[in-house]
Length: 281
Ligand code: AMP
Image 1 (cartoon, rainbow, N blue to C red):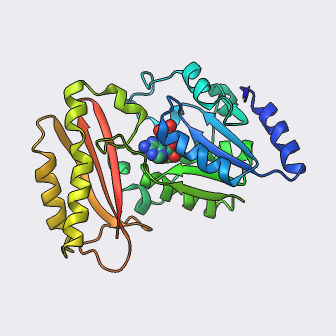
Image 2: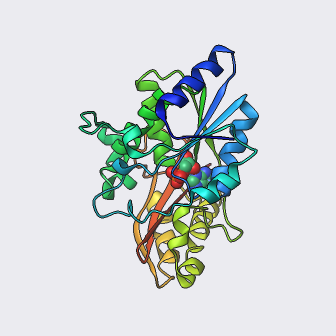
């Protein structure tokens, strides 16, 4: 695995690869890697000749009171995890990605971002769209890999790729979980022992939604209320949102009918905000 920090160097390398007809799979991350990230890497390896992972904690996707400064970082550990598996690890500094007087920004359709995580994190998805546009233009991959865990992100990315005519395929991989069901996340390290124990309620609440739906319950409000009750049985849980939305448009649905929906939630445990979701049916 070759570690590259310079934007121009990775551009030169990828040009060479593509001119020799090799396909490139790209896995963008913010590092502090876990098995969720590695599942994307594995999928990328199956589908491409060359795999490039990026690690970049992107400042523009964090709000002013969020955890950009203290976001967990451990490049040495990440390098060890990826060594021998991926071909190139791209780890740019902020000035390799952003100009000193950056003049470019994104506005994303309200329908996609005035819901779910976009409500409390208005800067987040425009920042994600901006950094991914830059990274896609640098790496020019054939395929890019994302986790279902960040479901709204996958919808924003698919719209970005189709709207800006990026010549790449977006591949979404299933959420990888801890043994007790908690979705793996770099932010799980923030949880205290007690918070960590209680956090497994999130997956249990999603399974409750699935059970209710499979037993014939179609009304979103009924399912959401029962999930709320279950989550609030944990003393440290503070619900940000629980929503049931059309999986393609993210419009809220009152009744689960023919189209696939996402049951999505964000819950705070102390200062740690956790998200998770499942698709129904
Ligand atoms: P992050 O480093 O948190 O920005 O995540 C980088 C990529 O890994 C994103 O596409 C995430 O959706 C994906 N990812 C994070 N956690 C998981 C997980 N538990 N299972 C599958 N993919 C994940």
